[in-house]
Image 1 (cartoon, helix red, strand yellow):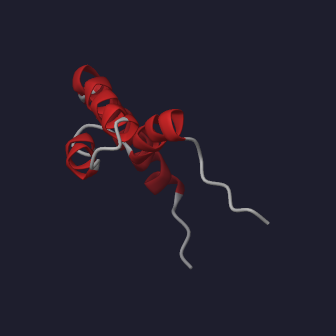
Image 2: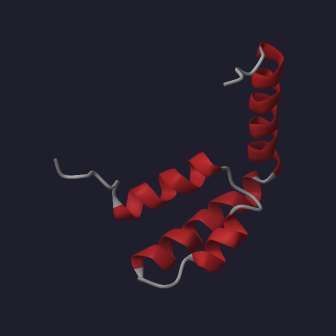
Length: 75
C-alpha cells in the first residue's frame, strides 16, 4: 500500500474546492434532479451521469442519503 504525500493530499483538496467553486451555479440543480428521480423511483442512472459532471462523490452521496437514508446491515 502506498500512502499519499502531503503535496498529493493538498492537490486533491485544492481540486475538490475548485470543482465546488467552478460548478456552484449548476451543482445544486443537478443534485435536486437526482434526488427527485430517487424519490419518484425513476431510473437514476441518467441523472447520476449528469451530476458527476458538476458534483463530487461526497455531494452526490449526501444528496442521496437525504432522500433515501443510509443502508445499515442487520447483525
